Length: 358
Image 1 (cartoon, rainbow, N blue to C red):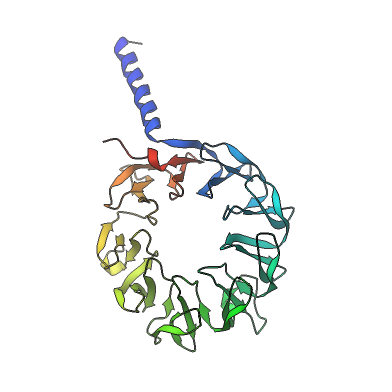
Image 2 (tube, rainbow, N blue to C red):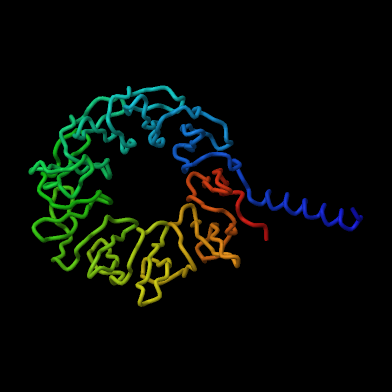
């Protein structure tokens, strides 16, 4: 090999090495799948089994679990020999696997299913309310909504369309708002979306409507950062907590407000573009492709290269890529870490390491 060729080869190797370093892997891609970090641990899959790693990539809980949820309030739901229970961060079983399904703990309680009925347990595994509900959702803002199928025509334990009446219970298991609503949502900042007899709006924790809409709006969503989505004639907009329309319904799709911005998609007549709007409805970022919500100041977004290959990176709130689109897929940042996929394997990058040097 000629000397000049050796020099070029050496430079190439150095550049590749530097590029790999810039990728800022906190944990190199080696897993079959990886979930965001919650409660200080990331859930990863190895040889079809699930385990949990710390932010250095050390296994805290070995990948031996059949199925697993994620850690919330110090516990994670896991499936062992066909039943669901809960483990702590040492991997010790603290609530014996005896449920047919289990959701993560929220506000001190977990939603579990036995047979076809749902109930709630505390951190010791004791029922605060026996499994008597046909459907339910975890606690939010101190209350959880629960549903009843009066006709007995539910096809499965998740068939929300068959629920005839919804109400809310509190942390003692007491029915706080009697079940009379046709549609409901989570409480946030003291109010929740609800519908009854053609009336849509938002109720307080006494079950009284504090914001009312006639059938103009067919679907209402929960509040996030002071704004809630409403749907009219197939298009979405946003209202504030007084019921005032802040963003007229004109978007085909949306994500809730997060870190001051909401991801929306314009109608096909308007170009069908994804963009971010602020709380006044002003467009702040127009995207060339898809994106996700902002987390820890960054949002994952895609870019199609000149070779027609879609890659993912992260943008800041000006719309600039601060992490170049070089990954096959990215998750969102949670607790300073984000899962990424490269060549079919998943690893993690660290928030503090990802910005390109100026």
